[in-house]
Image 1 (cartoon, one colour):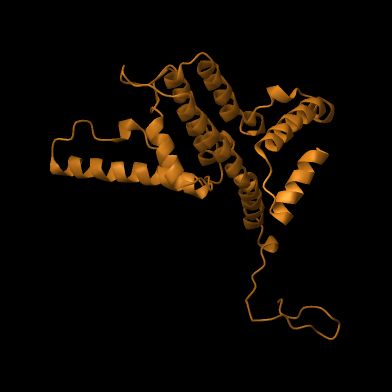
Image 2 (cartoon, rainbow, N blue to C red; image 1 turned 90 degrees about the vertical axis):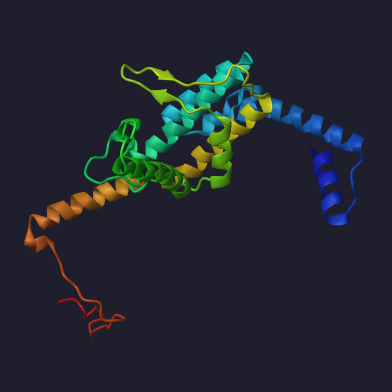
Length: 252
């Protein structure tokens, strides 16, 4: 590690570009150091560490691990379907408030869930055709707003959507998708898509706690509304003016 730091200082502060052999030695030394130190520091073997372990949304983490089992045997098309489900689970986690919040709608929902049954089936007249267009716009807009509101990069989301199949759910819990027999996915496609889901899940954690805050505020407001003595009405009148006793004098 001292050799690595010496090479770093020389490159950063003195402009000395390290030789290829030096870079290789530093890389091997760093790997040996992490392999030896990781069990002692965090209690796991270095080669078993997975970025998916950082995902805090349980359903998303479960689907990421299940998708990996198919990638491990080279079935990348099916593994990508698992990643598609993992991302959908991430959106549902925040749009539905973890399915535990009833009083306050999730601010990340942007309206109720749209299902394929909401669309007019085989629209026959101009009204039904116009409604189908509106539903299509609403569906795409809702998906974009949910992603963007959680800090997810939209162009990367569109690439992910293009790479992964859309998995549909049916009554009875069946999940299925359609893919061309000639369609193939590479390990690089899978790795990129998996990292996208993990990074999106980590970005989305900034929204954790918002539901609890809204629920707590709603509970306070509900209790206050049941008793007029609990409600205080105040007018904004500019900066606070302190009385002789050193207390605010704008409250009536």
